[in-house]
Image (cartoon, rainbow, N blue to C red):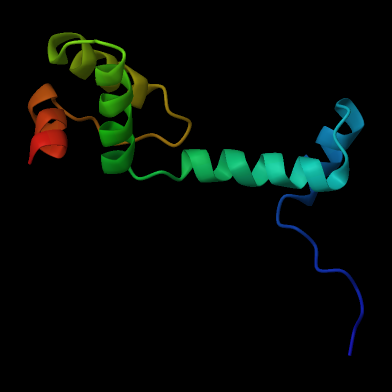
Length: 93
């Protein structure tokens, strides 16, 4: 039975973060996990979450849907291009 530590799939990124920031290895691993989780959010969840956040800030749908469409284009893991109508259907069914 091997006692070797299992390597994290992003070990190189964690090492980079520990070299270039005050983060320790455990903290860097948590940051990487948080970022990966953030970018793995499904499109529908992202649209619903952002709609709720922007509504809570008093924005109107006329402001919200174009903004969400623009945010989707800038996501690191590209989402499919959605029309404003498709965005509304995700939120309202």
